[in-house]
Image 1 (cartoon, one colour):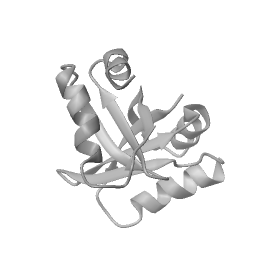
Image 2 (cartoon, one colour):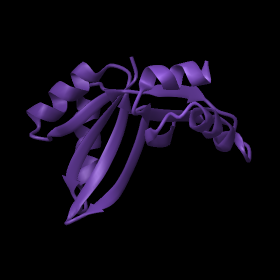
Image 3 (cartoon, one colour):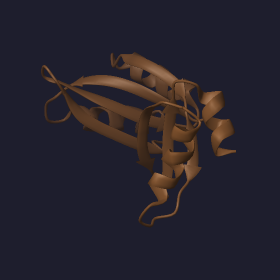
Image 4 (cartoon, one colour):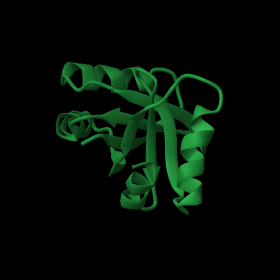
Length: 124
C-alpha cells in the first residue's frame, strides 16, 4: 500500500538531510517527495513510501513527528503536455476533491483525495 507521510519540520538547513539520513539508515526508500515552506518557520514535507512501518518507526525513534499518514493513489503518467490535466479532469468530473498531488520517481503521479474510493473508481 502506497502511503504518504506528512511531516512538519523546522524550516532550516539540514532538516531534510536529517530525514533522508534517518530513513536511509532504516532501509526505508523514499519513492516520492514534496517539501515547501508552510509559514511560521515550518516546512510541510510529504514523503511517499511503500511500507510505512519502518519509516514510521525510524522517524518516531529520531524524534521526528509524523503529522498524518494516508493511503494514496500512485499512477504512471506520461511526461507530456496535458497529461496532468487529463487525470485531474476525470477526478473533477467525478466531483472528487484532491487534497494532495505531487510527482514521484519514474514519472508517477501521487494523489490523495477526500474520497479515495471514488478517486480510484473515476480513474478506473
